Length: 109
Image (tube, rainbow, N blue to C red; front, side, top):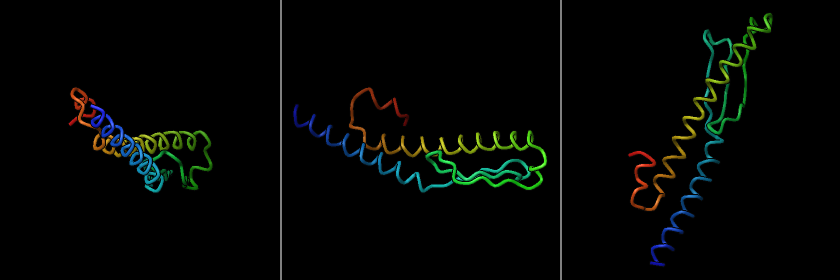
């Protein structure tokens, strides 16, 4: 009984370490999202940290249009980064989960 519990605790600790390593690695994964016509381009990490924003000079004349492009493009970039982040972390968590009956359905198959 205690051997199983100690084994599970060790596996959970190992999984936690792998999750932390994955989070650090995701800081180095960059994604790029562009608006229609590529007037705004956002570079973001998989941990959702904006690294760069490029704006076409034509948008500098129209503040409202620039703001709209920024909001739309940033939201698309954040959505893309979130999907990558969640997929990577879920894979690590699922791989490291101990075999506990009933929990296998939580993380999909």
